[in-house]
Length: 188
Image 1: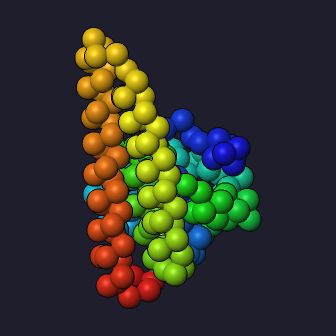
Image 2 (image 1 turned 45 degrees about the vertical axis):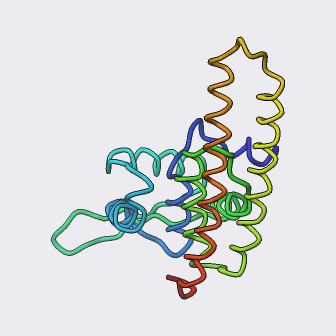
């Protein structure tokens, strides 16, 4: 759990998608934005200016390095590369569990699956099982809370019930992920 907290950025951030793209090779900001939009655009919604802000922060943290590359008849282009610290941070994130929330699963877990499919598809089934186990534990914990909540706390009970139903829908989704990902060739 301590590793999770150290990489937390104050909300779900596409920084790991950017680190993942850079782990596959250097790139420049516009190219990274185009790739994010094309490959994960229904997962992450980010403007180009937001992307540049994240890249500057990652560079300030020492996770990304930049260099200028000359271009004929154009200004120099800033090319970004993953630093060893950035690679370690990305690898740690790739192996970390995802919080049991619909939004975290939609953006973070889907991004994690994307990179695992490209890098190590054999690690996806154990990841799916570990995520199911975590969600089942959270579902059980919330059900215990619901069972013990006084009947007069109607809105608290409704909130817990909604959360339980969301977690159950995530379990269905994880099962569907396992089936769909089996049909994708490695690296795609």
